[in-house]
Image (cartoon, rainbow, N blue to C red; front, side, top):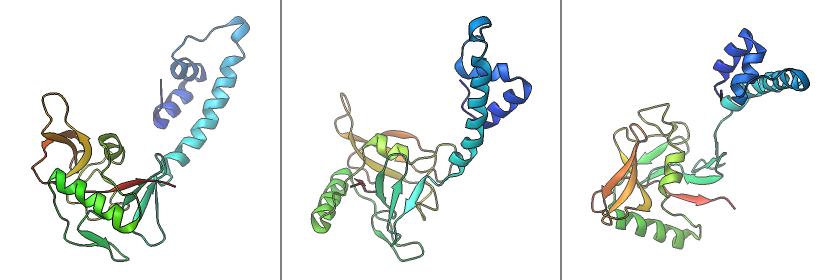
Length: 196
């Protein structure tokens, strides 16, 4: 199935029938279904007009005070700065801190209790969702998440399982890879909460 708008445009220019065939991954039937191809082509042409707008739309909304970022796809709200840093009105200032996994979890719990906002460590799927692997160094959007150290790892709340109970999952800012790390190792923390 074609989802890349550039591929779709190339195929559409070559043959509307091939768009229908390729996009639906099915042969183009003649006879009673002949009207389906022009309808599918019209639909895909409209879709092509929409895709560039959707692709260029900002995936994040920054809060009025600049300290939080809402992911438009997942509706999760992220602290814009790595823990240890604060939003100063223009960028994340201060020194990013690294924590072992237990200290990272305790930090999230203390912040949630102190602010009344349910901040927490993201699970590995949530953390991976903000890592754009088509971009690198860093994979985290530099506008939404400024001053992310390039060679850094970020803790998730997801524990290792089976043979790895003393490990937890993390994501590398360099390439977005997710892997297991010993819980006593130190990594950065980016906290998240659910939108209300």
